[in-house]
Length: 117
Image (cartoon, rainbow, N blue to C red; front, side, top):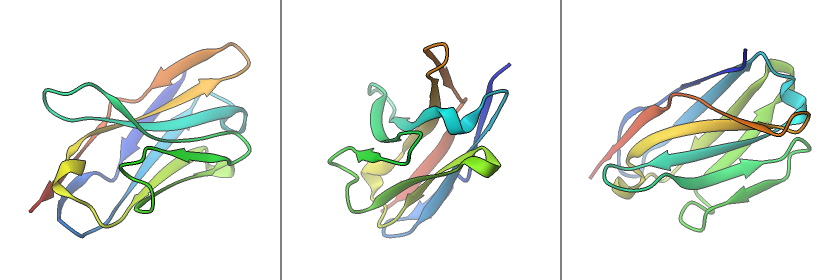
């Protein structure tokens, strides 16, 4: 059974930083692509960043230069380093993994990030 557990969210002032973690179990993490998404109140879930199994990253324009996605396959954990946070970054952040072996997508339950102005 695949499980993803996000952590590291919280309340931070504008300009501050947070590091989110996504711990995976029940999956060969090194063989997955991983992504971070977010959903603000009243808005649709949107892509934040993705990283392939080989470490190639892609970012939404709104977070380029501020956020960094990374992964530690030995720990089966992905990360999202968020710097220079803005109030508009406030959302629930979700991680997902895509398993290429069976073409399935799994989601975590999310972690709340709140940025105060």
